[in-house]
Length: 196
Image 1 (spheres, rainbow, N blue to C red):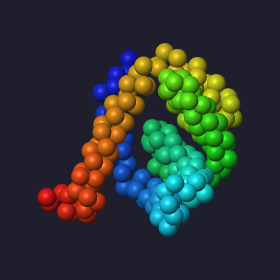
Image 2: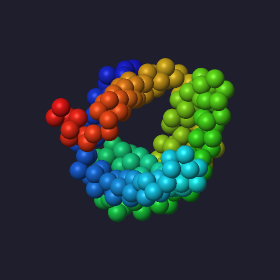
Image 3: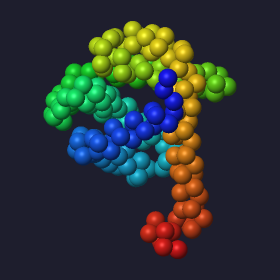
C-alpha cells in the first residue's frame, strides 16, 4: 500500500527528473497567463469585478492546456517514452475542450460544496481528483471520468486528502508568512525584506 512519504518521494523524483522539459513546456504558458492577468488587474481596482472575471477566465481557458500536457508527460514518462514538447502540446490541444468541460463541472461542484459548510467541497475535490487523469489517459468523456474517479477514490479518500494537505498546508503557511513580512515592512522590496 502506498503511503504519503512514498507518494511525495515519487512526485519529487518525477519533477526533478523532468524539470528541464517541464520548464520549457509550462513556463511560456504560465508566463503568458500571469502577464495577461497582471495586465488586466494592475491597471484597475482589485475589487473591479470585470477585470477579476477576465483574469479568472484567462486562467480557466489555459488551465486545460497545461494540465493535459502535464498528465500526458507523466503517462508517457511512466511508459519510458520521451515525447517532445510539441507532441505534448498538440495532444493537449486535442483534449482542451473535454478538459475545459470537466474543469468547469468540477469547479462549480466544489464551489457549491464549499458553500455548504466547506466539508462537502473538500469531499467533492478529493473524489474528483483522478477525473482529469482518466479523461486524458483513458480518453473518457468528462462525466465518465468523474464517475470513474468517484469510484476509484472511495478507498483512497484519506490518503489523497492527507497527501494534498501535506503539500498545500505548508505552501499556504509560507504564503501567509511572506504576505505578513511584506505587510510588516510596509511593502518594501523583497530584497529589502530579505537583507533586513
